[in-house]
Amino acid sequence: SSLQDITAQLERSDSEKAVLKDQVAALQSSTAASDATTDALKRELTTLRGVCTARDAELSLRAADIDAERAKSAVLEADACRVPHLVKDAEVAVGRIRALEAERDGLKADADRTRVLERQLVL
Image (cartoon, rainbow, N blue to C red; front, side):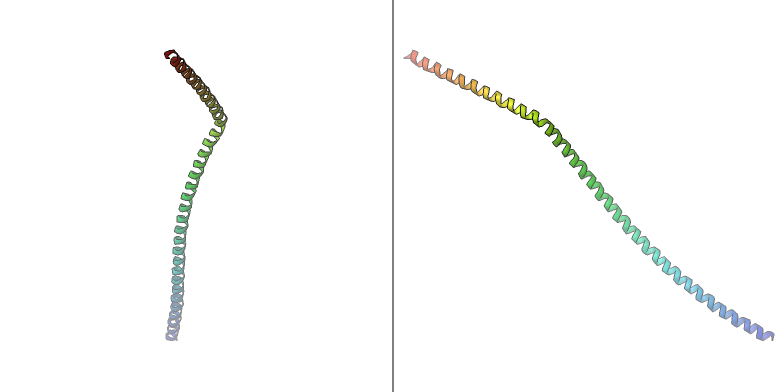
């Protein structure tokens, strides 16, 4: 009886060992799958970080473009504010040019008359 009990216990022990081995194998398989999933998620995270870095760089470029456009706009606005003054300055300059041309024409006429008088005196 005692030998049969020991044999039964050994059979139960072997059966429990087989069940435990199956559970260990299932856990190892599950761990391997979990590790593979973790590795895949890490690669995806690395990829997303790269995408974010690229987008940040693009945003920095766009911000620089916007700053450049704002600077151009400020210059154009300043020029636009100066335009009336520039137009007035140009009108004044044109007036001066015309006055100088008139003065020049007057001096030419005087010089011509002087030459005519000179010729008349020489004759």
